[in-house]
Image (cartoon, rainbow, N blue to C red; front, side):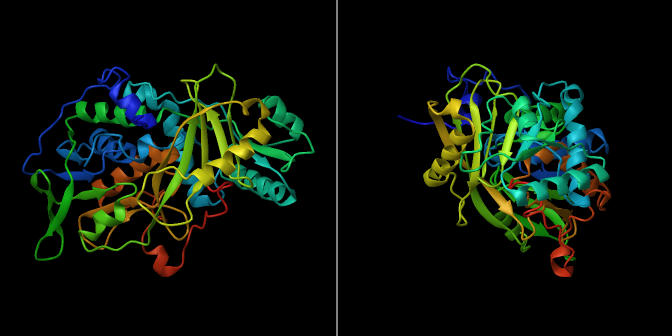
Length: 417
Protein backbone atom coordinates (compact mmCIF):
# COMPACT_ATOMS: atom_id res chain seq x y z
CA UNK A 1 0.00 0.00 0.00
CA UNK A 2 1.38 3.40 -0.96
CA UNK A 3 1.77 5.80 1.95
CA UNK A 4 1.47 9.57 1.72
CA UNK A 5 2.77 12.30 3.97
CA UNK A 6 0.37 14.64 5.72
CA UNK A 7 1.23 17.30 3.15
CA UNK A 8 0.77 15.10 0.08
CA UNK A 9 -2.73 14.00 1.10
CA UNK A 10 -3.77 17.58 1.78
CA UNK A 11 -2.00 18.82 -1.35
CA UNK A 12 -3.57 16.36 -3.78
CA UNK A 13 -6.92 16.18 -2.09
CA UNK A 14 -8.41 12.81 -1.27
CA UNK A 15 -10.06 12.66 -4.70
CA UNK A 16 -6.79 13.29 -6.50
CA UNK A 17 -7.09 16.98 -7.37
CA UNK A 18 -5.96 20.27 -5.86
CA UNK A 19 -9.31 21.62 -4.76
CA UNK A 20 -7.94 22.34 -1.28
CA UNK A 21 -5.17 24.55 -2.57
CA UNK A 22 -5.69 28.28 -3.19
CA UNK A 23 -4.80 29.47 -6.66
CA UNK A 24 -2.01 31.79 -7.78
CA UNK A 25 -0.36 32.39 -11.12
CA UNK A 26 1.95 29.59 -12.27
CA UNK A 27 4.55 32.00 -13.61
CA UNK A 28 7.28 31.31 -16.15
CA UNK A 29 10.65 32.87 -15.26
CA UNK A 30 11.49 36.23 -16.79
CA UNK A 31 14.97 37.18 -17.94
CA UNK A 32 15.60 39.60 -15.07
CA UNK A 33 14.33 40.36 -11.55
CA UNK A 34 15.18 42.91 -8.87
CA UNK A 35 15.45 40.06 -6.38
CA UNK A 36 15.19 36.27 -6.37
CA UNK A 37 14.21 34.12 -3.39
CA UNK A 38 15.42 30.52 -3.49
CA UNK A 39 12.96 28.32 -1.60
CA UNK A 40 9.17 28.20 -1.82
CA UNK A 41 8.38 27.34 1.79
CA UNK A 42 6.86 29.55 4.45
CA UNK A 43 10.04 31.57 5.07
CA UNK A 44 10.76 32.11 1.37
CA UNK A 45 7.22 33.05 0.36
CA UNK A 46 6.90 35.23 3.46
CA UNK A 47 10.13 37.02 2.54
CA UNK A 48 8.80 37.73 -0.95
CA UNK A 49 5.51 38.97 0.49
CA UNK A 50 7.22 41.41 2.88
CA UNK A 51 9.62 42.58 0.18
CA UNK A 52 6.58 43.53 -1.87
CA UNK A 53 4.19 44.74 0.85
CA UNK A 54 6.65 46.54 3.14
CA UNK A 55 9.54 47.52 0.84
CA UNK A 56 7.74 48.01 -2.47
CA UNK A 57 9.85 45.51 -4.46
CA UNK A 58 7.41 43.68 -6.71
CA UNK A 59 9.69 42.46 -9.51
CA UNK A 60 10.57 39.38 -7.48
CA UNK A 61 10.72 35.67 -8.24
CA UNK A 62 10.40 32.79 -5.78
CA UNK A 63 12.13 29.70 -7.15
CA UNK A 64 11.04 26.29 -5.82
CA UNK A 65 12.57 23.07 -7.13
CA UNK A 66 9.45 21.11 -6.17
CA UNK A 67 6.06 22.49 -5.29
CA UNK A 68 5.14 25.29 -2.90
CA UNK A 69 5.13 24.09 0.70
CA UNK A 70 6.58 20.70 -0.25
CA UNK A 71 9.60 20.83 2.05
CA UNK A 72 9.86 21.35 5.79
CA UNK A 73 6.85 23.67 5.80
CA UNK A 74 4.69 20.60 5.21
CA UNK A 75 6.74 18.31 7.48
CA UNK A 76 6.60 19.92 10.89
CA UNK A 77 4.50 19.63 14.01
CA UNK A 78 3.05 23.16 13.79
CA UNK A 79 4.03 24.42 17.25
CA UNK A 80 4.31 28.17 17.88
CA UNK A 81 5.94 29.68 20.97
CA UNK A 82 8.44 32.36 21.99
CA UNK A 83 9.64 31.22 25.43
CA UNK A 84 13.33 31.14 24.54
CA UNK A 85 15.96 31.98 27.14
CA UNK A 86 18.41 34.43 25.61
CA UNK A 87 17.58 38.05 24.80
CA UNK A 88 18.33 37.67 21.08
CA UNK A 89 16.15 34.59 20.70
CA UNK A 90 13.30 36.00 22.77
CA UNK A 91 13.20 39.12 20.59
CA UNK A 92 13.13 37.13 17.35
CA UNK A 93 10.53 34.55 18.34
CA UNK A 94 8.31 37.05 20.12
CA UNK A 95 8.39 39.24 17.02
CA UNK A 96 7.17 36.21 15.10
CA UNK A 97 4.47 35.40 17.64
CA UNK A 98 3.07 38.92 17.45
CA UNK A 99 2.84 38.59 13.66
CA UNK A 100 1.19 35.17 14.00
CA UNK A 101 -1.63 36.65 16.04
CA UNK A 102 -2.90 38.78 13.13
CA UNK A 103 -1.57 36.80 10.18
CA UNK A 104 -4.91 35.40 8.99
CA UNK A 105 -6.37 38.91 8.83
CA UNK A 106 -3.28 40.40 7.16
CA UNK A 107 -3.16 37.70 4.45
CA UNK A 108 -6.96 37.35 4.23
CA UNK A 109 -6.40 33.60 4.45
CA UNK A 110 -7.07 31.38 7.46
CA UNK A 111 -3.75 29.97 8.66
CA UNK A 112 -5.62 28.38 11.59
CA UNK A 113 -3.51 29.99 14.29
CA UNK A 114 -4.76 28.72 17.64
CA UNK A 115 -3.40 30.17 20.89
CA UNK A 116 -4.24 27.07 22.90
CA UNK A 117 -1.16 27.28 25.14
CA UNK A 118 2.17 25.45 25.21
CA UNK A 119 2.95 23.64 28.45
CA UNK A 120 6.46 22.32 29.18
CA UNK A 121 6.73 19.62 31.81
CA UNK A 122 9.29 19.34 34.61
CA UNK A 123 10.13 15.82 35.84
CA UNK A 124 13.00 16.37 38.29
CA UNK A 125 14.62 19.07 40.39
CA UNK A 126 16.87 20.17 37.54
CA UNK A 127 13.86 20.55 35.22
CA UNK A 128 12.10 22.67 37.83
CA UNK A 129 15.10 24.97 38.25
CA UNK A 130 15.59 25.34 34.49
CA UNK A 131 11.89 26.04 33.89
CA UNK A 132 11.73 28.72 36.57
CA UNK A 133 14.89 30.32 35.19
CA UNK A 134 13.17 30.49 31.80
CA UNK A 135 10.05 31.99 33.29
CA UNK A 136 11.99 34.80 34.99
CA UNK A 137 14.12 35.48 31.87
CA UNK A 138 11.02 35.53 29.67
CA UNK A 139 9.22 37.99 31.89
CA UNK A 140 12.25 40.30 31.82
CA UNK A 141 11.92 40.28 28.01
CA UNK A 142 8.17 40.89 28.02
CA UNK A 143 7.37 37.29 27.08
CA UNK A 144 4.50 35.63 28.92
CA UNK A 145 5.34 32.47 30.89
CA UNK A 146 4.12 31.12 34.22
CA UNK A 147 4.76 28.24 36.63
CA UNK A 148 2.08 25.61 37.30
CA UNK A 149 1.93 23.05 40.06
CA UNK A 150 1.15 19.45 39.01
CA UNK A 151 -2.48 19.98 40.00
CA UNK A 152 -2.70 23.20 37.96
CA UNK A 153 -1.08 21.43 35.00
CA UNK A 154 -3.69 18.66 35.28
CA UNK A 155 -6.46 21.25 35.39
CA UNK A 156 -5.11 22.94 32.25
CA UNK A 157 -4.63 19.60 30.46
CA UNK A 158 -7.00 16.96 31.93
CA UNK A 159 -5.52 13.94 30.06
CA UNK A 160 -2.15 14.47 31.80
CA UNK A 161 -1.11 11.74 34.25
CA UNK A 162 0.30 13.32 37.42
CA UNK A 163 0.60 10.10 39.44
CA UNK A 164 3.80 9.86 41.48
CA UNK A 165 4.45 6.22 40.55
CA UNK A 166 5.33 6.71 36.89
CA UNK A 167 8.84 6.71 35.46
CA UNK A 168 8.93 10.47 34.96
CA UNK A 169 6.54 12.03 37.50
CA UNK A 170 5.31 15.54 36.74
CA UNK A 171 6.67 18.02 39.30
CA UNK A 172 5.22 21.07 37.59
CA UNK A 173 5.15 22.86 34.26
CA UNK A 174 5.92 26.16 32.55
CA UNK A 175 2.98 27.52 30.54
CA UNK A 176 3.01 30.08 27.73
CA UNK A 177 -0.64 30.79 27.11
CA UNK A 178 0.00 32.75 23.89
CA UNK A 179 1.71 29.74 22.34
CA UNK A 180 -0.18 27.25 20.23
CA UNK A 181 -0.39 25.85 16.72
CA UNK A 182 -1.19 26.82 13.13
CA UNK A 183 -1.84 24.93 9.89
CA UNK A 184 1.57 24.37 8.27
CA UNK A 185 0.67 24.24 4.57
CA UNK A 186 -1.88 27.03 4.92
CA UNK A 187 0.89 29.41 6.00
CA UNK A 188 2.78 28.79 2.75
CA UNK A 189 -0.36 29.04 0.66
CA UNK A 190 -1.52 32.21 2.38
CA UNK A 191 1.81 33.92 1.77
CA UNK A 192 1.89 32.60 -1.82
CA UNK A 193 -1.53 34.01 -2.67
CA UNK A 194 -0.82 37.35 -1.00
CA UNK A 195 2.59 37.70 -2.69
CA UNK A 196 1.10 36.76 -6.06
CA UNK A 197 -1.53 39.46 -5.69
CA UNK A 198 1.30 41.99 -5.30
CA UNK A 199 2.97 40.84 -8.53
CA UNK A 200 5.52 38.33 -7.22
CA UNK A 201 6.29 35.46 -9.63
CA UNK A 202 6.11 32.01 -8.00
CA UNK A 203 7.99 29.52 -10.14
CA UNK A 204 7.65 25.86 -9.18
CA UNK A 205 9.72 22.96 -10.55
CA UNK A 206 12.65 25.34 -10.96
CA UNK A 207 15.90 24.12 -9.43
CA UNK A 208 18.86 26.43 -8.90
CA UNK A 209 21.93 24.89 -10.57
CA UNK A 210 24.49 27.67 -10.17
CA UNK A 211 25.28 31.34 -9.63
CA UNK A 212 27.13 33.80 -11.84
CA UNK A 213 29.26 36.60 -10.44
CA UNK A 214 30.63 39.75 -12.05
CA UNK A 215 34.27 40.81 -12.17
CA UNK A 216 34.01 42.11 -8.60
CA UNK A 217 32.61 38.85 -7.24
CA UNK A 218 29.04 40.13 -6.80
CA UNK A 219 25.97 38.13 -7.81
CA UNK A 220 24.73 38.96 -11.29
CA UNK A 221 22.61 35.94 -12.28
CA UNK A 222 21.10 32.65 -11.15
CA UNK A 223 21.36 29.53 -13.28
CA UNK A 224 18.25 27.34 -13.07
CA UNK A 225 16.78 24.25 -14.66
CA UNK A 226 14.44 26.61 -16.52
CA UNK A 227 17.06 29.02 -17.80
CA UNK A 228 19.27 31.92 -16.73
CA UNK A 229 17.79 34.69 -14.54
CA UNK A 230 19.60 38.00 -14.16
CA UNK A 231 19.42 39.57 -10.71
CA UNK A 232 21.61 41.48 -8.29
CA UNK A 233 19.98 40.18 -5.10
CA UNK A 234 19.42 36.55 -4.10
CA UNK A 235 18.01 35.36 -0.79
CA UNK A 236 18.51 31.66 -0.08
CA UNK A 237 16.04 30.12 2.36
CA UNK A 238 15.88 26.44 1.43
CA UNK A 239 15.58 24.44 4.65
CA UNK A 240 17.42 21.14 4.53
CA UNK A 241 19.23 22.04 1.31
CA UNK A 242 20.89 25.33 2.20
CA UNK A 243 24.45 23.97 2.29
CA UNK A 244 24.08 22.43 -1.17
CA UNK A 245 22.70 25.65 -2.66
CA UNK A 246 25.31 27.87 -1.02
CA UNK A 247 28.16 25.67 -2.24
CA UNK A 248 27.12 26.66 -5.76
CA UNK A 249 28.21 30.19 -4.83
CA UNK A 250 31.41 28.95 -3.12
CA UNK A 251 30.05 29.83 0.33
CA UNK A 252 30.53 27.32 3.14
CA UNK A 253 28.29 27.46 6.20
CA UNK A 254 28.61 25.79 9.62
CA UNK A 255 25.57 23.55 9.08
CA UNK A 256 24.73 19.90 9.57
CA UNK A 257 21.49 18.31 8.35
CA UNK A 258 19.55 15.77 10.41
CA UNK A 259 16.21 13.99 9.96
CA UNK A 260 13.74 15.08 12.64
CA UNK A 261 11.13 12.45 13.46
CA UNK A 262 7.39 12.94 13.86
CA UNK A 263 4.16 10.98 13.47
CA UNK A 264 0.39 11.38 13.59
CA UNK A 265 -2.42 9.16 14.80
CA UNK A 266 -5.78 8.25 13.40
CA UNK A 267 -8.25 11.16 13.75
CA UNK A 268 -10.51 11.26 16.80
CA UNK A 269 -12.94 13.76 18.28
CA UNK A 270 -11.41 16.73 20.17
CA UNK A 271 -9.73 15.32 23.26
CA UNK A 272 -6.51 17.27 23.80
CA UNK A 273 -6.76 21.00 24.62
CA UNK A 274 -3.20 22.32 24.30
CA UNK A 275 0.40 21.52 23.38
CA UNK A 276 2.44 19.54 25.91
CA UNK A 277 6.21 19.17 25.62
CA UNK A 278 8.81 17.30 27.65
CA UNK A 279 12.53 17.60 27.13
CA UNK A 280 13.44 14.86 29.61
CA UNK A 281 11.53 12.17 27.74
CA UNK A 282 11.85 13.99 24.41
CA UNK A 283 8.26 13.99 23.29
CA UNK A 284 5.58 16.54 22.53
CA UNK A 285 1.95 16.26 21.50
CA UNK A 286 -1.02 18.30 20.31
CA UNK A 287 -4.21 17.60 18.37
CA UNK A 288 -4.79 18.96 14.88
CA UNK A 289 -8.02 20.48 13.65
CA UNK A 290 -8.59 17.27 11.67
CA UNK A 291 -8.49 15.27 14.91
CA UNK A 292 -5.08 13.63 14.56
CA UNK A 293 -2.68 13.52 17.48
CA UNK A 294 0.46 15.25 16.22
CA UNK A 295 3.45 13.75 18.02
CA UNK A 296 7.04 14.97 17.78
CA UNK A 297 10.13 12.96 18.57
CA UNK A 298 13.84 13.67 18.29
CA UNK A 299 16.47 14.01 15.59
CA UNK A 300 18.42 11.06 14.29
CA UNK A 301 21.90 10.65 15.72
CA UNK A 302 23.51 10.89 12.28
CA UNK A 303 23.52 13.44 9.48
CA UNK A 304 21.35 12.60 6.50
CA UNK A 305 19.10 14.05 3.79
CA UNK A 306 16.61 11.18 4.00
CA UNK A 307 13.00 11.91 4.93
CA UNK A 308 12.26 8.50 6.43
CA UNK A 309 10.74 7.90 9.83
CA UNK A 310 13.04 6.56 12.54
CA UNK A 311 11.18 3.61 14.09
CA UNK A 312 13.32 3.26 17.22
CA UNK A 313 13.04 6.98 18.04
CA UNK A 314 9.29 7.02 17.49
CA UNK A 315 8.79 3.87 19.58
CA UNK A 316 10.58 5.47 22.53
CA UNK A 317 8.50 8.60 22.12
CA UNK A 318 5.23 6.67 22.02
CA UNK A 319 6.17 4.79 25.18
CA UNK A 320 6.55 8.13 26.95
CA UNK A 321 3.33 9.54 25.48
CA UNK A 322 1.37 6.49 26.65
CA UNK A 323 2.75 6.86 30.17
CA UNK A 324 1.93 10.55 30.41
CA UNK A 325 -1.45 10.19 28.68
CA UNK A 326 -2.79 6.68 29.35
CA UNK A 327 -6.05 7.38 27.50
CA UNK A 328 -4.12 7.23 24.21
CA UNK A 329 -2.68 3.72 24.64
CA UNK A 330 -5.08 2.13 22.16
CA UNK A 331 -4.66 4.81 19.49
CA UNK A 332 -3.40 3.68 16.10
CA UNK A 333 -0.58 5.59 14.42
CA UNK A 334 -1.43 6.64 10.88
CA UNK A 335 1.93 7.69 9.41
CA UNK A 336 5.38 8.90 10.33
CA UNK A 337 8.06 10.89 8.56
CA UNK A 338 11.34 12.72 8.95
CA UNK A 339 11.82 16.38 8.08
CA UNK A 340 15.34 17.58 7.33
CA UNK A 341 16.62 20.28 9.68
CA UNK A 342 19.77 22.36 9.27
CA UNK A 343 21.59 22.79 12.57
CA UNK A 344 24.28 25.35 13.47
CA UNK A 345 26.85 24.82 16.26
CA UNK A 346 24.84 27.00 18.66
CA UNK A 347 21.41 25.76 17.51
CA UNK A 348 20.39 29.29 16.52
CA UNK A 349 19.64 30.48 12.98
CA UNK A 350 21.68 32.50 10.51
CA UNK A 351 19.77 35.44 8.97
CA UNK A 352 22.43 37.51 7.31
CA UNK A 353 24.42 38.89 4.45
CA UNK A 354 27.12 36.57 3.12
CA UNK A 355 30.67 37.39 1.98
CA UNK A 356 29.32 37.43 -1.60
CA UNK A 357 27.78 40.80 -2.41
CA UNK A 358 24.10 40.47 -3.22
CA UNK A 359 23.78 37.02 -1.65
CA UNK A 360 21.80 36.61 1.59
CA UNK A 361 21.00 33.51 3.61
CA UNK A 362 18.34 32.44 6.09
CA UNK A 363 19.08 29.00 7.53
CA UNK A 364 20.12 26.88 10.52
CA UNK A 365 16.78 26.92 12.31
CA UNK A 366 17.11 23.37 13.53
CA UNK A 367 13.72 22.62 15.04
CA UNK A 368 12.63 26.25 15.50
CA UNK A 369 11.82 27.21 11.93
CA UNK A 370 8.05 26.95 11.72
CA UNK A 371 7.31 28.98 14.84
CA UNK A 372 9.57 31.76 13.54
CA UNK A 373 8.09 31.91 10.02
CA UNK A 374 6.52 35.39 9.88
CA UNK A 375 9.19 37.04 12.04
CA UNK A 376 12.02 35.41 10.12
CA UNK A 377 10.52 36.41 6.78
CA UNK A 378 9.91 39.98 7.95
CA UNK A 379 13.48 40.65 9.11
CA UNK A 380 15.03 38.76 6.20
CA UNK A 381 13.09 40.93 3.75
CA UNK A 382 14.43 44.01 5.56
CA UNK A 383 17.99 42.66 5.24
CA UNK A 384 17.65 42.02 1.51
CA UNK A 385 15.90 45.31 0.73
CA UNK A 386 18.32 47.49 2.71
CA UNK A 387 21.51 45.42 2.43
CA UNK A 388 21.68 45.74 6.21
CA UNK A 389 20.20 43.56 8.95
CA UNK A 390 17.14 44.48 10.94
CA UNK A 391 18.05 45.13 14.62
CA UNK A 392 16.30 41.87 15.56
CA UNK A 393 18.36 39.64 13.26
CA UNK A 394 21.64 41.57 13.53
CA UNK A 395 22.99 39.14 16.21
CA UNK A 396 22.25 36.15 13.96
CA UNK A 397 25.12 36.84 11.58
CA UNK A 398 27.69 34.43 10.16
CA UNK A 399 30.62 36.21 11.82
CA UNK A 400 29.52 35.14 15.30
CA UNK A 401 31.03 31.69 14.70
CA UNK A 402 34.37 33.35 13.96
CA UNK A 403 34.22 35.86 16.79
CA UNK A 404 32.68 33.65 19.48
CA UNK A 405 29.45 35.59 20.04
CA UNK A 406 27.28 32.49 20.03
CA UNK A 407 23.58 32.38 20.92
CA UNK A 408 23.69 28.95 22.47
CA UNK A 409 20.07 27.83 22.63
CA UNK A 410 21.05 24.13 22.36
CA UNK A 411 19.79 23.43 25.87
CA UNK A 412 18.24 26.78 26.69
CA UNK A 413 15.24 26.39 24.39
CA UNK A 414 13.40 24.55 27.21
CA UNK A 415 13.19 21.52 24.95
CA UNK A 416 15.36 20.32 22.11
CA UNK A 417 12.88 21.82 19.64
